[in-house]
Image (cartoon, rainbow, N blue to C red):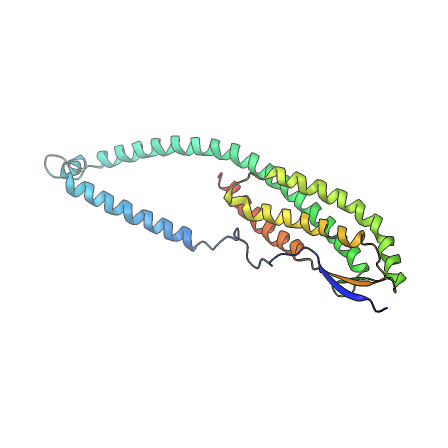
Amino acid sequence: MEQEKVTRKLFSCAKIKTSQYKEEGDNKNIEKIITIIFFVAVLLTIIFYRYKSILNIFFDKNGDFQWVGVTSIVAILTFGYSIYSTNKKNKYDIISKERIRWINDVKQQIAELLVLMNKYDNIVRKCSAEGRLQLSTNTPKQLKIRNKYHKEANLLMEDISFKINILLLSFADNPDNEQIISCIKDASNWVDSFYMYWNWCPNPFVDVTFLYDNVPIQNLMIVSRDYLNREWHKAQKGK
């Protein structure tokens, strides 16, 4: 009797070309600085125009310019900036130190997860041909290959599951972290989907082919790279 040919698509997801965490150039920062300078200039112009008596600080009763007024204002501004700068530096040191430590921990966990997932992908590739995992009772060689790597794959699944749980516990559940959390969950679903292949029982009436890709691995690499780069730059600024 001729076997029925069946195709099963294992877990996959849309490929991410550019993550939401990819940083833009410095153009925005330059625009912000120019905007701030413009508004400060306008504000000072309005103040001096509205309250012309302020100008008397810089001139004596004879109308001669006096530097004492300028020196006093500079001294006040310097003192105020010194207090602001000290407070900001203390805050920066605390936030930056803890943030960088967290970033390094997460980077280590993601790197180890990617290594494990690539190992898993390599194991699967040993059982497949061009993204196709085929099982048939007419091809005992395929079953032999699958059984050979099944135990090795199971050992990796335990480590992968452990790393994924650590990472999911490391990220706060908020809109900004949504994409990277989604990629981590996709990685978990991708590995779990191979359960169908490893545990498929041969059927004399069915010739089944499993289709798969490694898009979840690629997505996790792209998104985590951009996320960690962004967080690193924020930590350097004490944010």
